[in-house]
Length: 419
Image 1: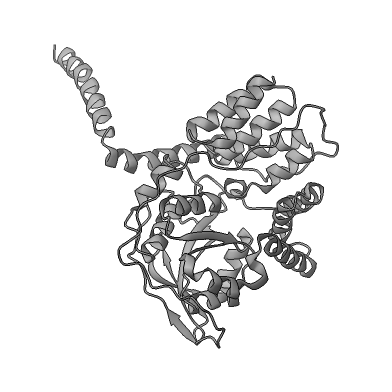
Image 2: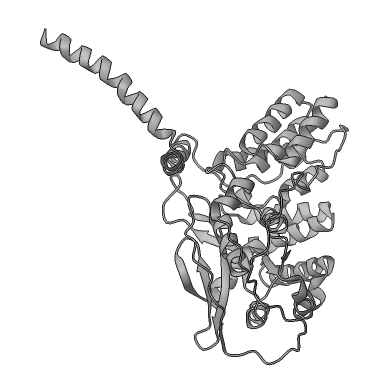
């Protein structure tokens, strides 16, 4: 009898506990705290079942096809309503006269924002916008450009797009191939700078993890005496000091990209500082020259070859970009490289290396299953290989993770009309 009561109690209690857990999970704050932990546990489990391997290099004789070659769109389609400017925006300076840089500069630090899971981009951009008086929050940014907590990447273009459409009193630009001297010049003239750099994860995401990832960092000062920059780090804290050499080493893995927010009346001042790099094409050529020089100095520098490829993609020089990316892959790249940078997908697609494109996308998805970018390019590879139904499914899956993903919407419409 006692055992029967225990069984009955168990059968009643379990559904109640499960229901209570499900109801608690519906609370947004609890859900956000649990989602990333569940996702991390699943990621680690996948790494045990399917161990990490080096990113694949191209096949000796990739197959080609005469299927149509549509050009994926790259422009966001939604246009959010800009917010009103702050009542007390920073005062603009209309003229600029180059002078010797001071040995130490510390711009006023914006209100610090601690990032939530996978949110360094939105958190850092929020701090940057706060510098100019914006009153929004980290959630305002992430809800629009990465509504899924599990989305591990936000592109520079997406961050600039948000600023342009939600802080209409500011101009927003990004360039590549920056230098330490340029960063100091910008800071000394009142311009904080947001960069993307490499990052070491404190915990392993899977067995044999190399712990390499991406991170955004807002620079607000420098000190020549200690050879350090001062910045706002959404993960490690406010007013973090980083040595010049360490920052440049981490920064160059992302082609030394930098984002600039500025008042329209300060544009001429900024143009004077950037000089020829104000022109995007010239800037890319200068970045390409710098990457080529680094590869000449060290032919086994995988990041230099990768940056060469990325800058060549900008100029639609896809055959050369394919060769540069191949060299980088042969030398060896971090396990998460294709979570954050997608130039190889463009190069493989436009050179008709379709089986290689599929293999590369699959490798990226093994590490980041919810990568909408990798799913997009997997879909194009499948379509090129005559597997339209699978391609459509890949595009639909990409849209599940990012419903307003214009590239996947276009791809789905194209392939559905041209099976």
